[in-house]
Image 1: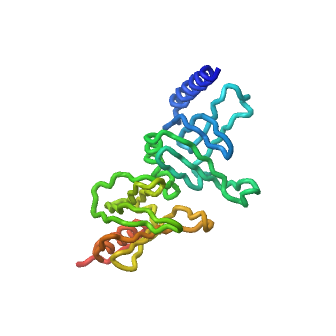
Image 2: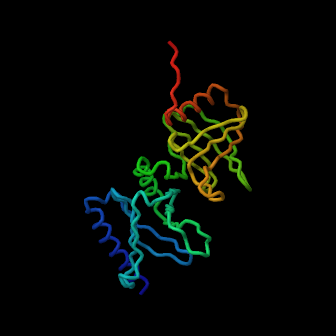
Image 3: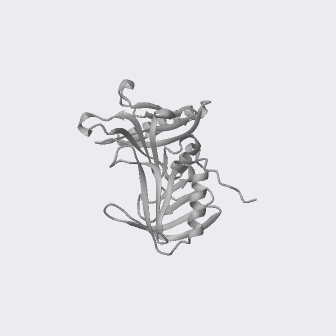
Amino acid sequence: MAFRSQKAIGCVMFILLCSLAGHAQSRWTAEVRHDHWRGECKGVLSMTEQGLSFTEVQPKKKAADLHQWTWPDDEIQELIVAPGEVTLFTYVDSSWTKLGVDRGYRFSVPASRAEELSTMLRERLQPRLIVRFAEPVDPLLWEVPVKRIGAIKGSQGRLLVGDNRIVFESAENGSSRTWSYDDIENVSTTGPFQLTIATYERDRSQYGSIHAFTFQLKRPVDERRYDDLWLAVNQRKGLKTLQSP
């Protein structure tokens, strides 16, 4: 019976994926698992020109009981893409038991498909798209081994700086980040062995605040490199500089 049930779900998912893929506005679809507070369900996550949607696939359920959600781009407060996982936060408050925390939806997605989704949504959702894995940096301008300072525990890795993005690459689960310069509010330093990157990623310990990532640098970064980085980030926000004659 379990085999029949799995086979039936697989057939329904295949038909649904084919239907979505053939729809003029569907640009990306994937079989996913939606993680509930208790339990889970399977279905299809898809991206269209307007936003994201999820359709549960469960042959034994009545249509009225299936989870079906659609989130237009402007209703997505933050979309976090990590290896094998996509988490979406809306502007809707959760139940009173969570004290007004914004409602979130977490999906388990094949790792390669999650990376595809982040690439396709980068321009549409910046800076609401949070990339929690290390993307390639090409061309690489410079790199330095670092320790990211954490509230309880830090994480080891490398900071890679390119001409349009900064990447923190770490082997520790959930620690890596990729930031385009448009994702960064500011960079600052207190000296050659320290660098802080203030990003638009939400710091959930402080409602609506900017999230600052502070790094201890294991090798000094000279002032010229820091100045070039600061200038590149701020020129993306419209900073104009005087040109030498």
